Image (cartoon, rainbow, N blue to C red; front, side, top):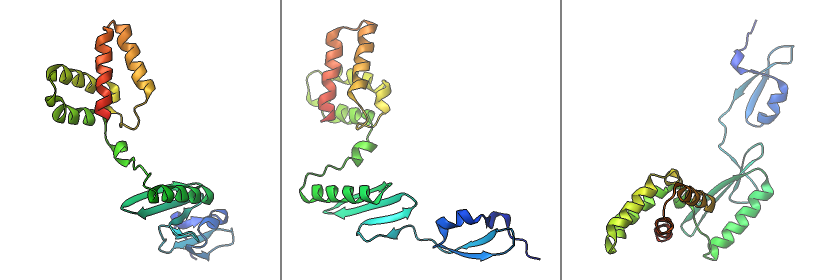
Length: 182
């Protein structure tokens, strides 16, 4: 008598998802099947070039154009198609802005760069470096620069005001952030 490996025994309802990528062999009368998986492709091509079906409710868009590489996953084919069309038109029209670098770069890294490259060119080097070091001690220094929002800055300002810091000190620190971001 054949006893299937319990890790390979599955119910028929589950098989519908994998019917195209599996070799299904019925083994007993209780409705259980043994499934031997064949080598599955990472994704399947669709009728639209650059859009791939990755599984239930997963459509991946891959665009490589003019030295720009963009990849993103969507729940529906229509969303993927719309994203592809708008992104390609932005790349072709030279209005596409790639924000992957901003997602990886932290505010503390930006302040370090500004401290080493721009601050030495100014007369108030010591004060500026002290302000940048103070910014590095804040919680938002660990945020990616694309994630820093006005609400974070306002919360910092309000906290400084409640601590009793002088308004000129607060404004000087705030005014230093703008050129650091640029």
